[in-house]
Length: 110
Image (cartoon, rainbow, N blue to C red; front, side, top):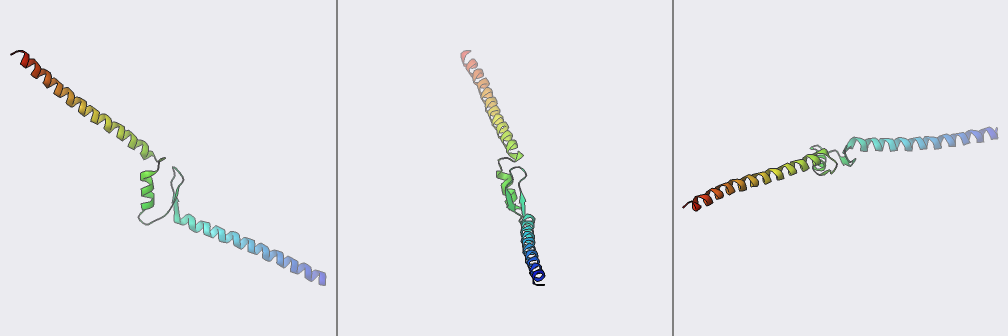
């Protein structure tokens, strides 16, 4: 009877240890789930952010994320604006040169 009692106590100890392992796994999973529900991530670079009511963290990140597609659009916008400015200056110079040539020609005829 003593061997059976010892075997039962050993089995109880093993099961209690397994219960403790499972409780630790459950606690870790609950903690992960709570963190998962309180965070979001950038789909382009993987950075994670706490979820806030007005989305300021995500909004700020979108403005600065180097992998966000808006960076390509901003670069294209900058390039087109530079070309537009150059074109405006070029047209202005052409207009001024045109009038200068006209003035020069009118002075020569006198």
